[in-house]
Length: 451
Image (cartoon, rainbow, N blue to C red; front, side, top):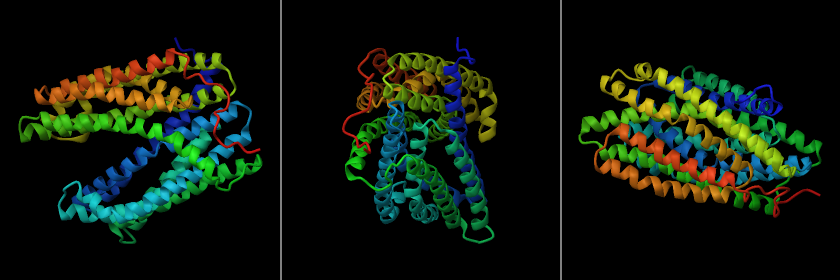
């Protein structure tokens, strides 16, 4: 049983609660953006949807800027090297600038081909291209936000990112309202408002990190060896992220392939999208504990305290499982009613109930998986996570495709996703966590530490 009065539990909650609120702030304000654009008409809203998929994919692949930086900074902090922690954090920031500039140039140049990949009509493609071309200008600020958030989490500060997330997203909504309607810029105004809010948010986070770096005498200048080191450390996490996204894409492909007719395909895809949306929203609650796991694991390993790592990991696994039980019960209880919030299609609403019940059963497994993922990321065990992701994908792919070929139905496919994909992730992560290979203490060699 988890005892909240324990000092370790209080520390987990101190990091996890602000992280959860910051994670939830983003989708809530994105919903507000969609509502603002939605009043412009169906075509602009559909264009926003296409642009959002492209941007989310780019940012999702760069999540290592937050995760990898958190682990490295926390390890230095645990070793008592605050100056080195901030020096490594600065390396991550400069890496974000480099990647952001490249992505911005390529994104602006390739906006047309990117939106045309989706095969939408000109009425949708044109506004999508307008939004995306402007939104790509915010790539560097977005990636800086990821890296700076990683630095602060590594320093055990999840409150500052929360304040900036809430303030920045509120500014985003205000600017969208102003530029879309009174200024008459339409969808372009929405994109511009988002970019300006991202610049302001990135600036606020950079001020916090820069002040801490100056206080410790850490250099703010770019250091090529340090930047290259940060980039190499991020490659395995990119592979891990690709395998996870491939699993979700494969599931959606199987839904499309397994339908026996146009109407069934329409219903299955709509239901699947709603289920994935709700699954993703609940994942924020579980991922907040994983963020705490990254910070606490890195700090304890930097301090050479393996006993603390083991004890904290055990407690966080319990927190993850308990959180999964809670979210599962909430999802099960809401399953008969949630469909009506999103659609009036009776077939979709009826099919959504069993799918959500299956997802609810899988929530405790997801809670433990997310925590263990965070622990191993905090330990800098990215190479294993990359290999584990590939193994998981190889185990799940034939099962998902078989469900599609035999037209097993959406509910059966979700059983496969929960049992095989999430189950395989649980097995490979538990296998690693029970061993000692990942428990590397002290500072990781090959990274720059300021003298």
